[in-house]
Each structure stands twice: as C-alpha cells, then as structure tokens.
Length: 239
Image 1 (cartoon, rainbow, N blue to C red):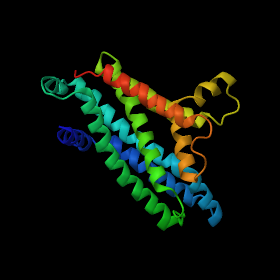
Image 2: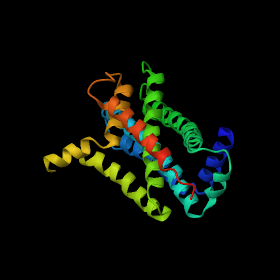
Image 3: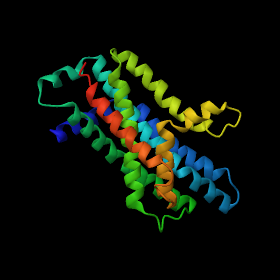
Image 4: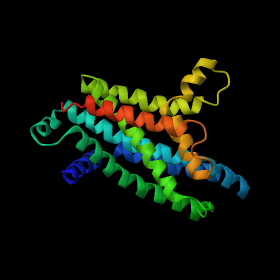
C-alpha cells in the first residue's frame, strides 16, 4: 500500500515539476553566488559554510511546497475522492509522501554537498553525517506536516492553495527579518518562534558539530512535528 502511494506521489511530483525544480535550483544559484562574490579563498569558504544549512533548508521547503500544493490541487479536482473507497488511511498517505520526497531530498543534498566540496573546496571531513541527515529529515518532516495541515484545514481547496503561499513565503521572509534590529521587540519574539527558525538552528548545530540540545530548539521542533502531524491526520480531506 505504501509503495503504491509513493508511486502516486511521484506521479504528482513529475506531472508539474516547475515549482519544485525552481526551488531545487535556487540553492545551487545561491551557492555559486556566494562563491563568486568573494575574492579571498578563506572568505569564500566562510560564506559558503555559513550558507549550506540555509541552502538545504530551502530545498526541503521546495519539495514540501510541491507535495502539499499537489495535494490541495488533487482535492480541488476531486481526484482523491476514489481513495476514500480504498483501505488507504490518512496516516498512510502522509507517511508515503514523506518517504518519497525524502528520497529526492537526499539525492539533491548529496549533489549540493558534492558541488560545494569539489568546486569550492569545502571540507566535508569530520562531520557527523548520520546526525546531519537525521536532522535534515526532521526538518523536512516539519515543513511537510505544516503544509499538509494547511492544505487540509481549510474547507475549500483553492483557499488552501492560496494560504500555502502565505505560510511558506512568510517563513522565508521571517527568517530574513530576524536580524533586522529596527523591528519591534514583540515581532522578534514572534519570528523567533516560527518553525523554520527551530529547524534551521537544529540543522546548523548538526552541521557545525555543536551542542544539538543547547536551548530548546530541538524540543520545540519535535513538538511542532508531533502536534501538526496529529492535526494533519485529524483534518485530512479527500476532497
């Protein structure tokens, strides 16, 4: 059953790949811009080192965006209605979507890391790759359940599609506003607690080899995954 659903998610992915491909191409563009903007080798390496986690985060969000947007579209055209008559449960649908897109994300990440190492000389030695991959998968799962909750929570699928733009673009804008000192204090508090901040901090800790459990970022990320995962199942809609 899971295998068949993964095939279904793959068909959706390749049916309308433009948004996903653009999202996956963006980290490579950012990588080369970061490298070409520096003359000194040390400066280039420092710039890319600092950006690798953000590049991977953008790729994870792009894949999630494609998956949940296709789900909302499938709701809108009533394609998912036939699944209601099958043994497929919402949990099966969510798990199969996560597994399929994680495979794509791992291939992309391997390509990004390889380019960073071969073209820009970023050292990949001494890193805890098992931990980095695990945190990347948790980050992806976080974005996926956020998107699936939004894609299902609203009664009309068209409204869900519009709200997905607001949520995902809002998270990207939010992480860039975090360093703006002119913002009111309460906005900094709000932005500091959006999910992408926790995911980025946890992935950064794994990438740099620092304390993963410093602060409450990991716990907050896992809490978001648990709560939004349950809500995604609770509000799952076939049409």
